[in-house]
Length: 253
Ligand code: IPE
Ligand code: IPE
Ligand code: MG
Image (cartoon, rainbow, N blue to C red; front, top):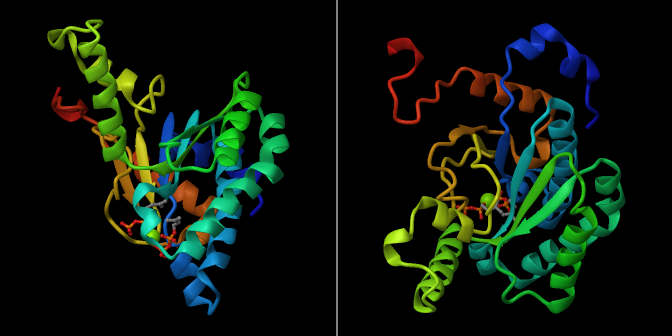
């Protein structure tokens, strides 16, 4: 997919859009995309990586500051071993092929999820990408890999419990900021908008705490088919939402 500078730059088009500061994406439907074409599911995952590459470019072009993508959930381990191995290899290949481009585009990469259970070589690779892009100041690309929000909250709870047990933290001093600082996403703003492709309308253990006030947009396209026109439609839909955060909203104030 190539990005059409005319759409991105046209003031009339831009006026109908609202660009979230932080966009979360549940990149779903790779398998169905492939099956519908008589291909193997793994081919859908390959196409999915291409769609991810495009999404990163779209976010840079349109001015999204943080992009969090769900690429492998803690529950995805229940898939056939070959598919899991293939997805893990794709991550390695994505890093190998795209690291230089990400650096050139000033993208800062952060990988969230548990590293427990990952091969040491993969952990080194993840650490290396984060280190090599740490000083970049453009788009923050957060890859949720081996990620589950419930596991994240359990990990955060353990960390807080250890702080209390060590006498460094009093139970009554625990507040929302304490929990936020203990999550994998510490330091990141909450997502404003969460997009899920491929028709499923559920969160599947993605950013449970952080999504407390996110807007949700569900689209029918399978992830490999998601393109600039789909992206623009999502931003138009988001522009029509009124975020109230528990207040009465502009119409009634
Ligand atoms: C999303 O596509 C990618 C991962 C979960 C790794 P799926 O593989 O879930 O595709 P469907 O939902 O089976 O079509
Ligand atoms: C969520 O999709 C995880 C990712 C996109 C990585 P799934 O395909 O695993 O979710 P379910 O099983 O349909 O809820
Ligand atoms: Mg799926």
